[in-house]
Length: 324
Image: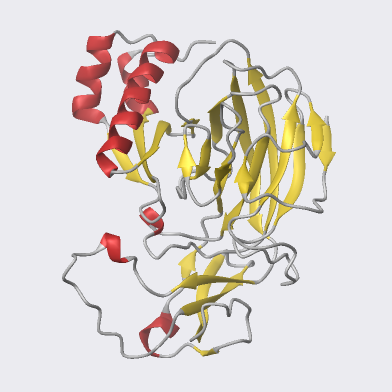
């Protein structure tokens, strides 16, 4: 069954909030999200900022110990402008490095070209609170020549965490959250560990585009139209978020410091290869040693994100097939 849902309130934590809609396994939902600052598709302040989440959605039959599969059927900005920060986070740079900026720009407003599926810097602003097209002055210099392809994705989404926790949308954990990974795009299926009855799926923080690591603390922050389909995988227990695209399987680790992210993601990938593809532990270790890929998710927020990837073509070449 397909559901159309219009939100009228949002959450700044992932937790055991009152569900906004009850759905069944294999149902799909079309809804909207506000941007990270709480502005809607018309630029109106719909709620306070901080990666507000639409939901949660109660998935009937989901129990602790299950896995919730969420397929991104549609992810697309629903307005013609978004905003970014204009400075790389200090923790990404050498401690002694002091940037020598030639202006006092704090925000960049980007114009979205839906016909060409691109984004371009349109205005610069000197106030962090300026996030709307028309608030700044026109971009000049080399940035005026910049046009980049859109890569729409949700920076923050997940299920309710265990033990009654409510985890801020500023960070991430084993339940998902603010992972800010630009590979979780339309067509990808996410796998999330279920900790509470109904899973309680949340979604928000739309990015029209973002480089690896979200190193300025933002993607192009924008409101979204979202459609997703859920499936309950009963008695399939995972420890960290997993994902599957047309070309790769993925496992995400969320923690700080960065080496702990690598540990979580790498261990989850070993489990993924053993449990879903039938590799022995030795086979998984040897394969990963020579064919593993890593992508950096969030490198800005309290918990960092590392994504461990394995090419499906390599698995196919080995004769490894995903179990039903």
